[in-house]
Length: 163
Ligand SMILES: [Zn+2]
Image 1 (cartoon, rainbow, N blue to C red):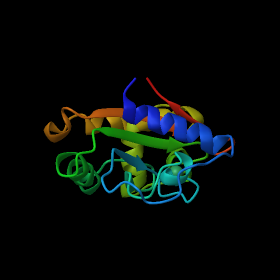
Image 2: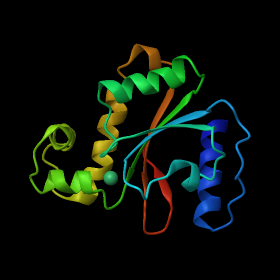
Image 3: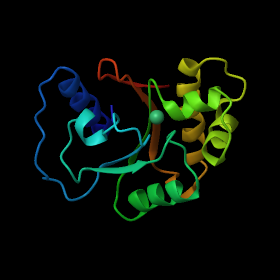
Image 4: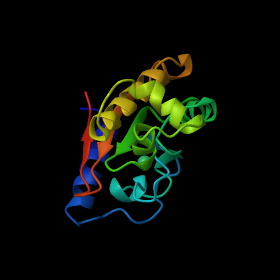
């Protein structure tokens, strides 16, 4: 398994088990990009137990990749050398939930385009993540990056990586 991915999986295990180790800002260069929801419960450095500076974090409600989010990811990979990109959704996401409740507007409409006819919030969360992963993979700048989807369970702190 890729070393960068192993660092995140091991760090999340430490976080979920309450034995965090990484506290100081040792790394100057990010090894991974995490595109995640702006929801305050999803703090990547904490839930992956990584030092400040080691992750390039892009946050927007619903973890979607519009032009500015995509440009930020491209900067992290193209200029800062990150090679792993994680799109991280989470259980109980209000952006996805609002979409399923029929809310409209730029954010909800983008998520709706991802989830289509999916009927439950629980199913729509990974579907939205996968659609964002597919959108990111279209970027030629990110052709060599390892782009993966994952969902964080706020109930127990566990991150599950999607296929
Ligand atoms: Zn959310």
